[in-house]
Image 1: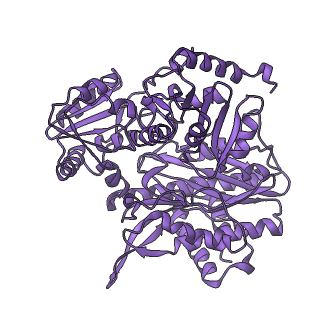
Image 2: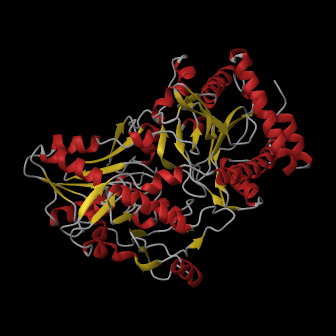
Image 3: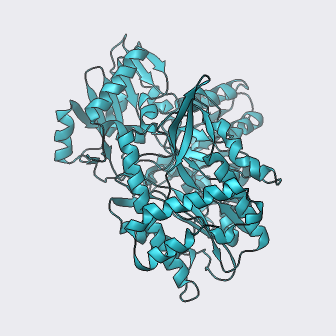
Amino acid sequence: MDQANHPIPVRLDLLRQAMRRHGLDAYIVPSSDPHMSEYLPGRWQARRWLSGFRGSVATLAVTADFAGLWVDSRYWQQAETELAGSGIELMRVQSAGGTQHVDYLADTLKPGQTVGVDGQVIALASGRGIEAALAARGIGFKTGIDLLTEVWADRPALPTAPIFEHLPPYATVPRADKLAHVRSEMAKAGADWHWISTLDDLAWVFNLRGADVNYNPIFLGHALIGRDSATLFVAPGKAPAEVVDSLKADGISLADYSDIGTRLAQLPAGSTLLVDPRRVALGLFQQIAAGVKVVEAINPSTFAKSMKRDDEAQHVRATMEQDGAALAEFFCWLEGALGKERITELTIDEQITAARARRPGFITPSFGTIAGFNANGALPHYHATPESHAEIEGNGLLLIDSGGQYLGGTTDITRVVAIGTPSAEQKRDFTLVLKGMIALTQAKFPRGTRSPLLDSIARAPIWADGINFGHGTGHGVGYFLNVHEGPQSISPSTPPDAHTAMEPGMITSNEPGIYRPGRWGVRIENLLLNVPAGTTEFGEFLAFETLTLCPIDTRCVDRSILREDEVTWLNDYHAMCRKRIAPLVSGDALAWLEMRTAAI
């Protein structure tokens, strides 16, 4: 787009005018909200509105004569396209969560100048790091100014979707028991109060769900939990009468979403408040009453939420069977329709969502479907649009990354399938990725192993061919909650801190890949459950149980580079898929399942 007709330079000019009014020499716009969310309601899509970049992770920094967007390698190609003509420079970083934008500002600005950010959308820990880096160069840091309220005239309002309860049998632990667990952990920390802002923690503790964020069944809110009281802060009218009564029966009161800062300011002097510095906003933290002692530690609910109980795991297994049946019906349709009707990447999304919607317990997709044919598959976070998408025809590889939110669990799966005849090089890439996925699946490791340390197991077969990929191998997955969940993360960019330890019941994705820009991409993804694997003189060990049930396209496999034990794993996996999915499908879908799970 020609810069003269591009809306972004106009928006940046408005921002710079506001910066001058407030005496700011630079302004940082993160991809965040007051809850440190990954996926944001429209009101906090400020970075997207100001830059035009649609990816989920990036940081915009603006000075009087420069604007840069710091983006990790997953989004470089997408950002290059979307920033064209905007006047914003693409700043390439090697990993998500980097702080290179802070280093740039510290190196560029002069002592006595000032950087601003909206403290309501930056984590306490991040804000401290920025302030320290800037202070070392004599640069000021202001956090009390939200410039977007001045320059974004049609900024969206807060979402209004109602809250609903996650009920038995899928909610297997009463909220009273969850509150008791949180209070027990508070007592261990010597805390009288605990403040929660992260939305999946709120949903888990209170057995509530919502629809305030696309694909994630969560709602906007905060909570303040005392030793014998609990207050949930949500917008007026979001909780139906029956939910209000249910909460009241468990000793939980409701307050206005906007009142959390006032309540933090009213905490009694001498009391102790437990907060997670990575999961609360700096701006709200600054409102805590003087005289309140603060204890900083990871939210107790974050650990508890990540370790699924045996009865929850059983619901997830049943959900995976239904999801696998939906995928069998979808892939049966796809193979039958190729060459007979026009199919695009957009059609893939429509059909796969329709197949899931026919399954019991399905609520929504768990993220926007990624369907990328050939070159588009080389973009790890590609999304087809009505304006830009490919038709599925000819020869090559189709990458489909999709998932569903069900009452009994959250699914996330990537499969790559042959369209026409894949090339020998495509088959080799596919098989190397499969080898990496199998290697991690078969790993056995001591309980408490830091999750990032497992990443190289999946990469080793890919590294052996002189290839690497730019994203992590795996992320935690929620239980009818966020498709990306912590605290575990199988990624080289995640520090191996104590809170990343692998524990029984955690569900993590396993999704190595190979991406050849402009040509094709391969990613194969299953979800894995941490299960006990025995105790020796060296301690407890864990292994992975594969949860995802969907055939892996053997038409893309180069059998000559698979070891016999890898062939055995693949055949055994397909036998399990056939056994568990077959009772849920019939006719053509059953015939497709039997064909695609045949031993090689």
